[in-house]
Image 1 (spheres, rainbow, N blue to C red):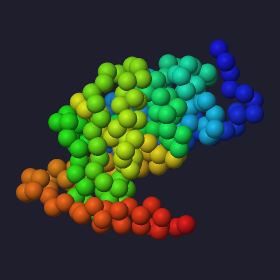
Image 2 (image 1 turned 45 degrees about the vertical axis):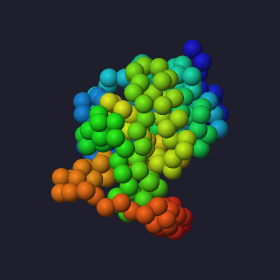
Image 3 (image 1 turned 180 degrees about the vertical axis):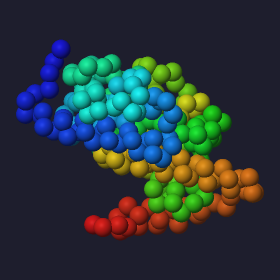
Image 4 (image 1 turned 180 degrees about the horizontal axis):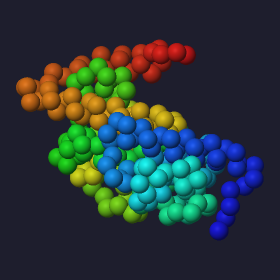
Length: 226
């Protein structure tokens, strides 16, 4: 088995700690149950990623239990088998150079939209801010190979959204680091719930596309501390 190069050991150790800690955010925001879901992070500019081990309880995760893989899914370092979604995470990283974090969840409301194969319409300013439009639906694909990753990449190719609802499955979210990907997954579930509740009251009002553009531009380039 290949090993992590000595020059990258400190970088990999830091990423293992970050990816491990971010899994607690999935639990904190109610995005996962039991051992479902996963977070991964890529080493910038390298053919390496760190991902959750398969089927290990969230309470038992440690930085050392995170698995280091190449982007083709081969295990480089770790005592556990990697997530069953590893091949798809690797495909996303190989196909989207700006992505350094990927998250997968089965969060309740977003997965309910995915089960119906319906995009979440952009009817909230928070959606315009974070996603720049509706949250799209990707195709149905079986778990275990690269097919889910292929669907994520193809669906997000023409969208500003950082999240996609994979049909009959759940959420995949991407970011320029693992924390941003987790944020996208959290926000996806939040708006999925709110828009669902709104529909119980009547038909939500759409936001004009030009207003969505302005919301997205402000949030991405002005909002917060720069």
